[in-house]
Length: 190
Ligand SMILES: Cc1cc2nc3c(=O)[nH]c(=O)nc-3n(C[C@H](O)[C@H](O)[C@H](O)COP(=O)(O)O)c2cc1C
Image 1 (tube, rainbow, N blue to C red):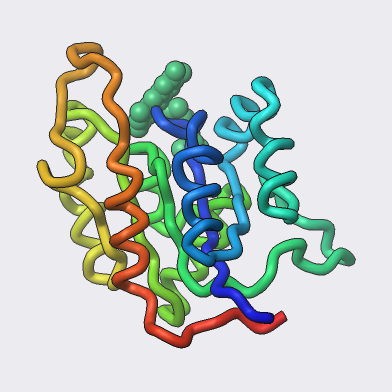
Image 2 (image 1 turned 180 degrees about the vertical axis):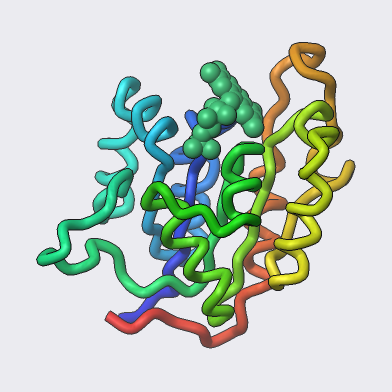
């Protein structure tokens, strides 16, 4: 049996605490296999709450936070689509610049250059993040590389720092966007 594999990358931003129930389990229900990689900070947050272990239980795959040993095989299967969600402002900037100083960035930066699988990014940012002088250039660089950015009011209306009540991410619409960028019939090779 073959299933498409979604490479879910979680950064240390609001909503990451919910990715198992709001992204991983719904993606599994849609027929995806899900391989999760977290940034080191996101990994420490989810380790602290026990969510990292629960993600491993439901996906049947290691939840990666660090590089493999050179002698070890990759613990994840081939990926058919990457979803970076939530992407912090920091992770968006590093992806645009090709900085690969953790496993999550390593895998997506390489995929951006390889251009062989779709990459969807949901930046979970506030208005101040987007006024940082380099932000627009980073967004344009990622767009120019074919990255699908889920930005704008239809996905995430911007709020000033500390000015908004906690908002839920548009989880279903994010997964719908992933479904749209994946070619029918695409499947991983075991
Ligand atoms: C409780 C908490 C919530 C945060 N939420 C966000 C957020 O929603 N978006 C964001 O860009 N940064 C947020 N940050 C800041 C990032 O966690 C910080 O920039 C971190 O270095 C990002 O690391 P990463 O990109 O490697 O995951 C938050 C920090 C804390 C402590």
